[in-house]
Image (tube, rainbow, N blue to C red; front, top):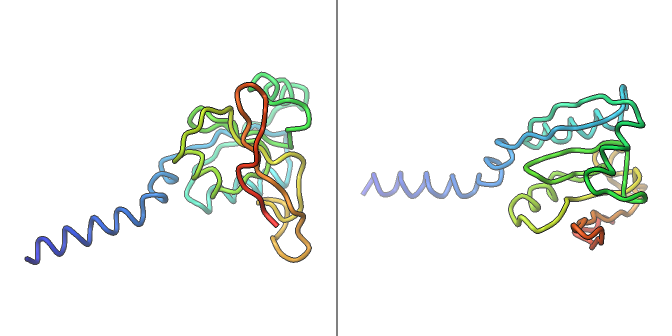
Length: 151
């Protein structure tokens, strides 16, 4: 009986930590311009939530070319672009939504938080002064749909 109890506890612990284990194994390649403070802050948000991240600093023109080549259209961009497991993560996307994207695996280019809304990860603290914003799922045909909303 003690063996079954230990096995059940180990299984329950493993299931509860499943999301963390997925995140811990995920690496985000971040493209940014040199010295962008909010890009560095977003990368810290990733790392604080179990991801590993590496920033590649690029000239602005090359960064924009890579965004467009990844399938992002003008109006859907922000200051940095992440790549993870075949998906594009554009801008200040919360890790909770990246976790969901990786769990659900929709047919899509990835996620974006256009512009730089105050209160999104890397753009100040959420709170009463935070800007409301949407995390958009970007489909392969360029269309978008709301993936999550933040007040």
